[in-house]
Length: 122
Image 1 (cartoon, helix red, strand yellow):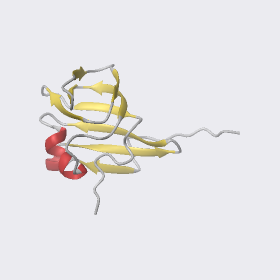
Image 2: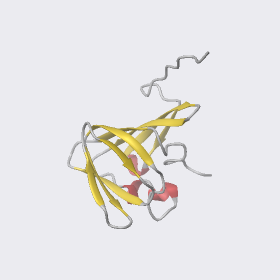
Image 3: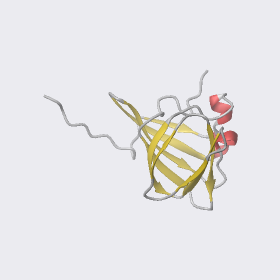
Image 4: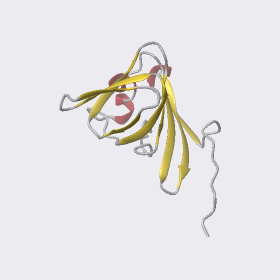
C-alpha cells in the first residue's frame, strides 16, 4: 500500500543560494525527484546569478511551476517571450534567460528541473 508523505519547504532538505545573495532555492526530495521553492530577489537575472553556477550559455533546466508572488520575464533562445505572475502555472523548456520584473521577489514552486538547478559542482 502506498504511504502518505509530508515534507515542508519551510524546513528544506537542501538550500542552494544564488550568486550575490540574490535569492535561493529550497528543496525537498521525493521519489519522482526534487521539488523546489525558488525565491528570486528584485534585480535577479539567470544570466548573472545562476549562469556562473550552471556554466551553460542559457538555462538548460526544464521547469513546471506555479507562481506564488512577483513577476518573472522569460526569453527563450529563439526570442519567444512570456511573463509569469501570481497564480500562473507555467512550463518553460530548456534554453532561456529570465529575470525578475519590478521590486517584489518572485517566488515559484517548481516540480521539474530542480535536481541540478543552481547546484554547485566542485
